[in-house]
Length: 211
Image (cartoon, rainbow, N blue to C red; front, top):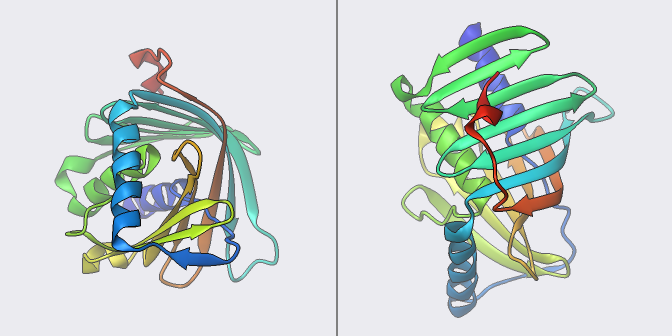
């Protein structure tokens, strides 16, 4: 049960979506140019502070479950999701461990001993930065639309595909920052997280990643 709760926490946290307009697939040269810009951006990103809105869509519910909070990221791999509305919850990825404070109840998991959780943690960190272009792990397709760029990823690892059938990153056309991410589960439920008021490379203390 503990592992299931922690997996649910990760799955609910990691995601967002993009409702695209008409889109066209990028050719090889356009793909290379986009990847180069995104990777350059990611390599320059030492920290991120951002507000987010999360919407969880379940087939059994008519309306989405909506949450709001703040994301804190510090290179190389410190991540904190702080939920403020409707409940105060905190999830922290730190030193190969996952820490969850759910309205005062805390849980901890060692990610280093679990390949799937370790992969999910890497997925989250790289998605936040925008550096996800690993063809050995994903089948990747690239698109341009009116709002920017959309990149779709299908995991190749069968174990990971049990939790994530596909996810999508939406990049700003101007800054090539990640603006939205979409996570689709095997049953077609999905989670949306939209980032706003994003600040890059601001000073963040390690104290921010303590429960």
